[in-house]
Image (cartoon, rainbow, N blue to C red; front, top):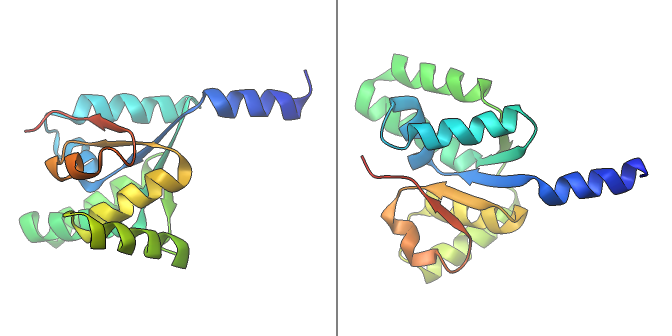
Amino acid sequence: MSSARWNARVSAEMKVYVLDSFALLAYLGGEAGEPQVKSVLAEALAGQAEIYLSIINYGEIAYITQREQGVPAAQMAIAAMDQLPLHIVEADRKLTLAAAYLKARYPISYADAFAVALARQVGATLLTGDPEFHEVEHLAAVEWLPKP
């Protein structure tokens, strides 16, 4: 089999996820969804999955951690995220306008709109436990984490 055909087959079989802040905060905080997120991260380390995170959700994790636990904890969360097998996606014009469209039409936070827009853009399953995503579940596949 040619390498191009093999790569196409592997890509078609690879799982693709987008994490929102709920998922990463559960992982970083050892909350109820941690084992599920840890499993997805292990799949990515094994080359069986790709994981994406919007830079907007990255910032959301940083500010939530700082607000709730202080600057040192936020710095540790940032360092931890930087070590994870994540593709951090910048908010370019296309993604920003897609998120703005979703925010205008659905009762979700702006940061959540970026997670949904990114999941749609890369054809991913959104990993979350945030109930806000029930409003947009018809727009992207959602894998639900347990609530704390």
